[in-house]
Length: 367
Image (cartoon, rainbow, N blue to C red; front, top):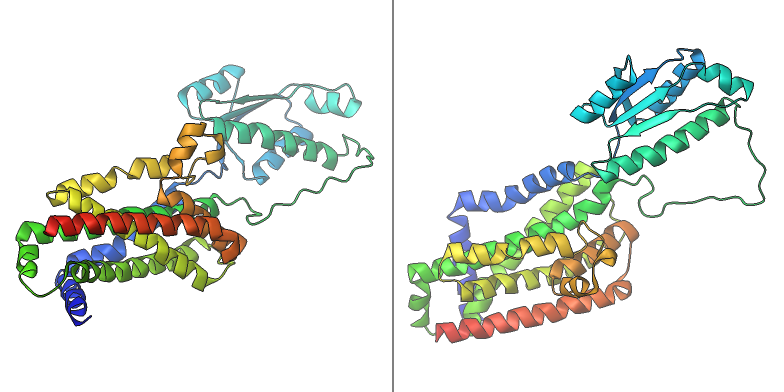
């Protein structure tokens, strides 16, 4: 144990003697969280809108005001003709165009009915669907408010409720995934490159002539980076709490323990990369190889339920797939350990396999 402690102390000295790397390890995850958290946002509001109002009555102006007050549509242009709407949509100046025909108010109040045209730029399906659905609801509410559309009496009272994220903030969905992604990329990176750097400098060969055993050397290498990973995870979660008001509805202790388990998997991946790579550049390339699959297949951004069966199975080989469910479950839903037993068991198995295989390969390489 004394020899393992000496290796741990040596690793910490290496880290502390490189203040630039230490600063990057602590500051970079927070910077990335801030950038990704604000950049990755699927809340569609403030869509640039152009309006061609041929009626110019108080009723038509109140309709336009109701659209603006919803914060979904920003009226940035007043069109003089339908061609102005067409040109704005063609050039991308506006995403949505409204055409209010002449005699709009007169026809509506007389009960004759009229047409209200909505033109949408459908090149991006997400804001297009939002514009379509939201505009319909806003117009119906406007007609009810103006007492143009009578309230029908129906035997069914439909009262939908949104659980866990009532305001539908996309940051609540993305930020936990960003935390897991940063840990899966950063921890293997610093672990793998640190071990490879030791090989490049010949320090490992010097350690082999000492009485230290291979498993003591491996533990001494891994424990400091596990502690660094926990510091990074804590820093990122605290930053997410203050920057994005991310709730913590479950047990912080459970989150800490399961994050430690996830970090063990990440450490195993970093050690495995170091046994395969001959230099730091190769180690970094091996670790970055997992970046795209982690983003695309883990459920971090895209729902796994819509993926083909084979691709869905491949996603089970990615640690982030299980950690995303764990961190979202604890933070947003307040889940307990028994509710996350399957995901925790999967991470435990991954940690045993990754660490076991990489330790065996590392010991063989030492010999």
